[in-house]
Length: 187
Image (tube, rainbow, N blue to C red):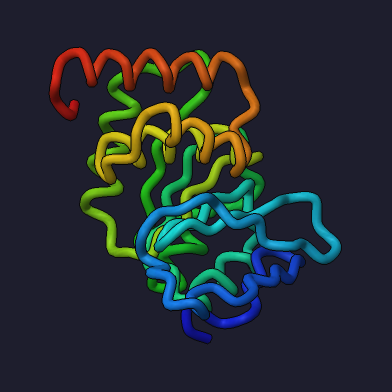
């Protein structure tokens, strides 16, 4: 199935993408995340341009992501959060795998810089995930602002629409973006 197909099935869920691109919309440019409707699962998936933001996919979900055209998966979960060998599954499908373990205890500028470097190097489209889409959305906001030129406030609002709920994560994003803007450079 190509990236613009009607169904994205991550895990046991079937996600209706809808008429993306039907009005001539550039599906590679970031816009507000589109929540993909879920049939029978508790994890939401979002699409914005050539980025998919999600909670933890299942093994079947990675196969479905490949069928949708995903080329790279960036996993923000720590090893103790994983219930299967995700690297083996993803690489076994021929996808690129990047793991940047992020927890509130390890959250710092170096993790954000590592993430930005991974996104720059990644073959697109990419799937960015953590356990619930909270961390994935936070780091996506940083990428939106610093790599794609979206104003900080707007990037944070988009991330909130795709799953950013944690106040400490929101504060980290705001502080990180404020610090890079004051320095006048990308980290």
